[in-house]
Image 1 (cartoon, rainbow, N blue to C red):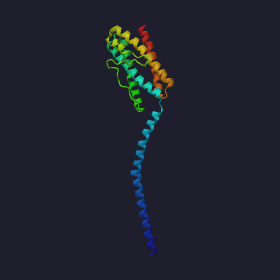
Image 2 (image 1 turned 90 degrees about the vertical axis):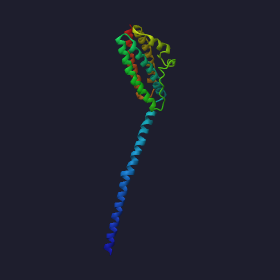
Image 3 (image 1 turned 60 degrees about the horizontal axis):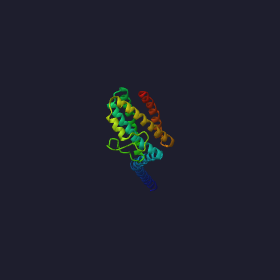
Image 4 (image 1 turned 60 degrees about the vertical axis):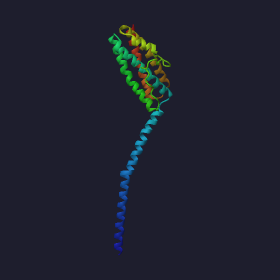
Length: 209
């Protein structure tokens, strides 16, 4: 009888261990794994988003918001010159300016979205809307009308003079961002604006001279 009781006890223990193993496997392989996965997917993006949001300040927001509008006007001016200028050199420069500033507009719009800020509406094409207030180097709606009506050599000269002034304003804004901004990508873009547009001002002054 004793031997039989020992055998029954051993069998029961083995069965219990088997059930426990199955339960652990079920928890680990299904619910447990799923919970961990969902925890990771929930926490990682929000953690990186909050890190992103925490790495900027008001100066960065102002820089991106204003430079988007500043760049949009430069792109409008460049498109007019590419279409109406007589000099191939002016047309090539206009195409280069548009090619550089279009992607930067997209980049800065992405920053504002990731920070929970509003991307400014594109008002550049709206009749009667003057974008010149508050930003250095911005052309008035009258200036833009004059450029739109100009053609040939007159367009070349007007575009170059206006774009020199526009670039000088952008450099001023970029210097403010470098001094006051906190977001690394924004201060680097400000650096790039200063380098590229200083070189273009020099080129345009030579073309005017």
